[in-house]
Image (cartoon, rainbow, N blue to C red; front, side, top):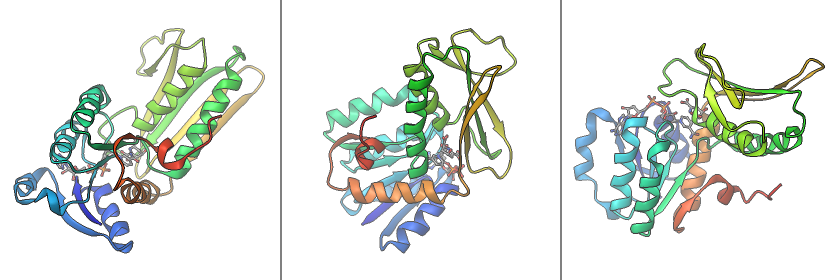
Length: 243
Ligand SMILES: NC(=O)C1=CN([C@@H]2O[C@H](COP(=O)(O)OP(=O)(O)OC[C@H]3O[C@@H](n4cnc5c(N)ncnc54)[C@H](O)[C@@H]3O)[C@@H](O)[C@H]2O)C=CC1
Ligand SMILES: O=C(O)C1=N[C@H](C(=O)O)C[C@H](O)C1
């Protein structure tokens, strides 16, 4: 497969390594300082774009691919308020767009455990729920995209909560799920869900030991998505049963 990398930072480099080891060809590595090279890329020479850049760049990168009929796999976080624009463009162009806040298989299993635990805890109002995420200090967005996915699933399943809020020493509304973001090197990504009561605590944690799981997930999705159309997610890719 011929892959164009939009964003060639920490993730782009590991994706390249894994893609090449699986027999794929990288036909371009685009960063903020060599974006002009995109002009030389012929759309017919690209099977799929893998996009891991930064929040301000994601929209124009994804647009570039969809407007040329190239399937786009994106993992960039921190731009979700603009996602409807990309969903519309995908529909208008009858294109292919795959987004995941986290491509690791382990985290996607963790998402399911989180949903199930939240359903069980809906009626247990003595427990206070909170999320903590820990990432390296170069991370640009907070909370992490993964923490937002976890929080949205908790809020959806627990009636006493109706929103999530970053804990920044401000008073927390009663119906808000607090998220604490910590930036500590070299943490590739840790997410902790806590239910705490006077009697006991329940805690579930996912700890990434490296970026390999995120990068491998993105390459596997790129292989899978090649002949598919529309808006696709990790649930489509993993075919999880509904709990
Ligand atoms: N969904 C997932 O599983 C994962 C998502 N991420 C997300 O992926 C993104 C990238 O993460 P890292 O590689 O760690 O960041 P990084 O900072 O190491 O790399 C980002 C790269 O994007 C490039 N870039 C900036 N503007 C650009 C533009 N207009 N066009 C093309 N490239 C541009 C920069 O030059 C930089 O090299 C972040 O949003 C991060 O949160 C990271 C890991 C896993
Ligand atoms: O920026 C990162 O590094 C990561 N970003 C993603 C996120 O925001 O959830 C996924 C992973 O946790 C690593």
